[in-house]
Amino acid sequence: MLVLYLSLIDNENDKSKFEIIYYEYRERMFSVAFDVVKNNEDAEDAVQNAFVGIANNMSSIGDPLSQKTLSYVLKASKNAAINIYNKNNKIKTVEFNDDINLSDDDFFDEIIAKKERGEIVDAIYNLNDTYKLPLYYYFVCDMKIKDIANLLGISVSAVKVRIHRGKKKLLKFTGGDGDEK
Image (cartoon, rainbow, N blue to C red; front, top):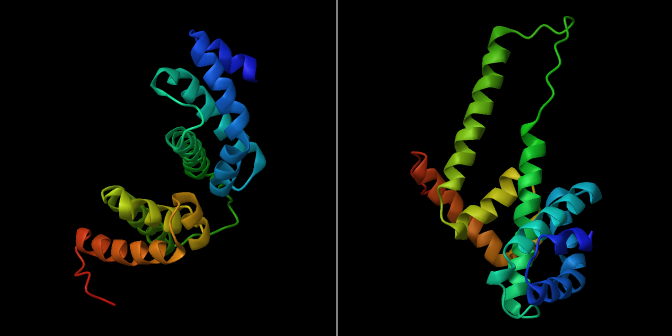
């Protein structure tokens, strides 16, 4: 795979930096991706997608062993994994079975629940990253607070506080009062 990535890079200096990044960070990138998608195949795909993006942006990377580069590659891996996770969860198989009789009320309840969930996800996206990311990971990705803390590089208590405050902001944003405790 490394040869494929290197073929995307023209500058020899950038190729050397990419090799360092590849060997230094690929296992950590896989771990971050796996935390999001929860399976090996999707995590590998996410890391591959992240490496393609990194290869295409090598000119913006300075020291390949810096904390800034580490943060960049882990974030690229996480974002690629989130994209795969979202893509996988948008595709739902609908089977029509003549033996199942769905009443009109049940049908409309199901439609309303899906619509409301979509509106809530949209509202989460409108929050700033401080609250958006913990809420998204917790409610949409169904991640554990400990995993969110590891992914964001903050403490468990900070994640809990951000989720609590984010829920208040979300209530205000969606028309609630946000004053419940």
